[in-house]
Amino acid sequence: MIPLDDISSLRKEYKRGDLIEDAIPEDPMQLFAQWFSEVGSMNIPEPNAMILSTVSPEGRPSSRTVLLKGLEQGSFVFFTNYESKKSREIQQHPHVSLLFLWLEAERQIRIEGIATRIPKAESESYFASRPRESQLGAWASEQSKPISSREELEQRFKEVEQRFQESDVIPMPDHWGGYAVSPTSIEFWQGRVGRLHDRIIYEKHGDAWTKQRLNP
Image (cartoon, rainbow, N blue to C red; front, side):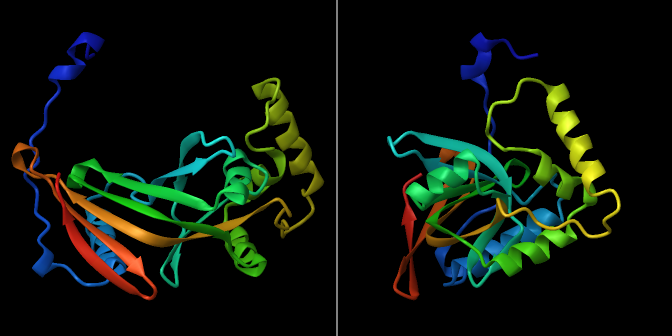
């Protein structure tokens, strides 16, 4: 156990790699694919976990972890309840950020972009691939809304389970589906010794990307 008064003394030296402009591709999606493949080989739990940040109509930011479920035409795809807090905020302000943090690799990727709903047919295709319990959960949970107890949630699940007990195929709820985040900037961070970290940011201008080193 680490006492709270010892937090400031926590230290780690980063020595696993570097990030040099001449050694990386001009397209950031190629570098993302390379890094994602590398962390996948390290047996990192949930390497597709990413922190999604949105902004309320009042300008208040909020963050939560979602799972990357696809890269479609250069966009990052995730799925959720369209009536959840995150979805309501996206409808008001589609500008979002994503953050991948892979501590074991001493790397992180920060993405800014525009979130839009994907076609319903694509959401239905992914929904059909989910485990049955996850499909039932999408019907049972009114995501982000208050609920009186765990028991009430489990009762709602049982009711949905009974509703579809004779159905081999569970339809996708109308309130559920995917978003694609089209990136406008992607920053790659590689930990280095002495906190002199490598930071390379790609920014999109039209259909072209430019890259620039940032101070750590």
